[in-house]
Image (cartoon, rainbow, N blue to C red; front, side, top):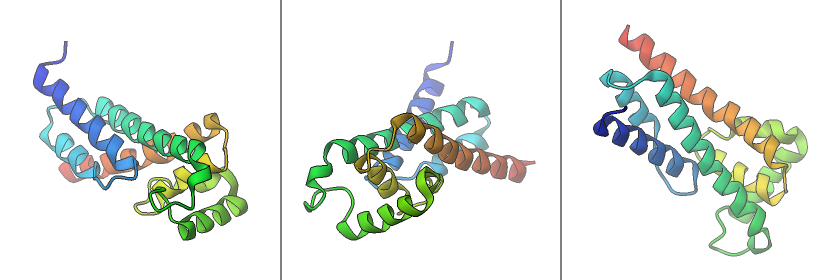
Length: 149
């Protein structure tokens, strides 16, 4: 059984990772780094929780794009027309591999929205985004752990 304070920590990381992947501004890397430095949490569990939260947040973006594509010219749509056009050009040129950039700040979130607008198969979307997001957290974890060593 996980102590309550540790459970709250994992839940907080999941929430921060989820929000960071949506159109809302947030950071999860600093929290993950702090939790790794604390030494109180299992490294594998932290990686799994952060990746799961971030991928789920990206899935929300995909759903927004998929189901609200007909509103893409509205001001409230999560990606501007210029951003949409740029992202669509990247998709046309590189295909699903462009989602390997989904972890990159500023451009990553709109890419996941565009994937939904373009009706990318959700299974392919999940696979590529999980590789990208998990790879970013894995690289961060290795960097922090090497810094601690």
